[in-house]
Length: 279
Image 1 (cartoon, one colour):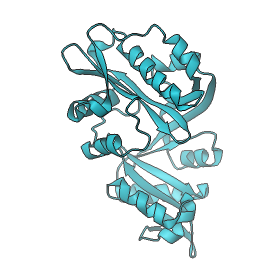
Image 2 (cartoon, rainbow, N blue to C red; image 1 turned 45 degrees about the horizontal axis):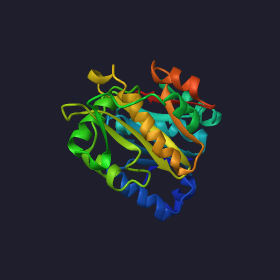
Image 3 (cartoon, helix red, strand yellow; image 1 turned 45 degrees about the vertical axis):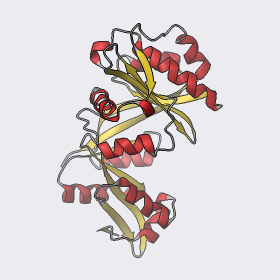
Image 4 (tube, rainbow, N blue to C red; image 1 turned 90 degrees about the vertical axis):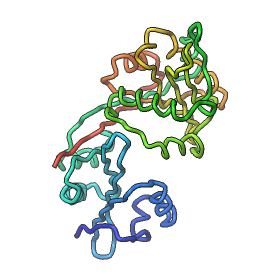
């Protein structure tokens, strides 16, 4: 078997992604950044591939598909050509892939746990979470996008696993304008008495069900009830979508959210690892 850089062989790689060639090509175009992809070939058959995605925190992620036994050679090729640390996400429940990544030299840099939480249970706990005096809550659809962008960067940089985040303005604007999971009633912004943005919550309306994506409050406002109020209002809106549960995840290193979710969750859905491989 041989490893070669991708040269437009969409027909060959599409089955690895469980997509049509046209769907893979469209996804590549939407990525909006230089694409690196390598393929493992067994004669004329593509048996595995790896592609890259650079996150706004400048972490370069690898996305593996196909035969887990090819992870080592794909990693070595990617590292050799890129010459920089790379990252990937892995689920220990997928034992063959997780073990292959370990053998390829990947090490854990962050572990997060997924939870399923019943709306009624969460809202009962939050029934007294009112917006602090002088503060207000608006939809992200009505917010100043430049100010919201800066707040999003601040909160992401303070979130385990995304330190150093510097967002891309075009990507951020597209998320608000064109992202199907976006719902203006569940992407909310807290505004302090001076008119500055102080916190945000976002709950995505995914096809598989509601996903609680992020809650964050700027440091000067963390002694207030703003965070809890944002969560309550977002969950109240999302509870009207016809689902009993929402899913979310948080880093085990998050000393505030992880223990709270562990107590609140109806089901603990497992953990996933953010891994790093250095040259």
